[in-house]
Image (cartoon, rainbow, N blue to C red; front, side):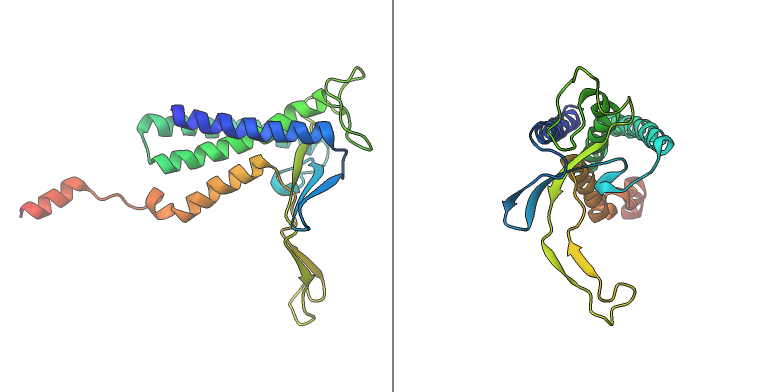
Length: 210
């Protein structure tokens, strides 16, 4: 259980350090070009899910935050059972990455609204005297990584999006999102290893003895 806990701790630490740095040094919409026009630190916040997807309204926000907490609790329990059963080590790493990423974004949603002032037009202040920018469970998730590597236009003959602009990679995301994506990507990549049928040793031994 030590290695999964270490992964979760490191992901949470890195994720929160980056987010707190952005909150304390950037105002909303501010950006810095780290590597030309293809890697930009762009401070934005979202009310919804990973990569800026929305689940609107006050009720929607409460529902999403509550759902996240329940889901992460379930993933945490699942991770614990995997370690107890000594399942595939890489699969445990994948679940640990997903768990840590989901937990990292939950911290924003649950606490950031209470702990920080608003980031519009000025950098946020920690524990402001007048109170935070939102109530408990209504915090916004901090995003900052923006990779507009390639921009262009769809040709006029292209279905649906003909003549429209496109950009790769458009979503602005954070370290927690990346952790979730890596975990899910590895599961997809190694799904045969994780979920394929395991050889039945006893049956094979019987066949060999005949």
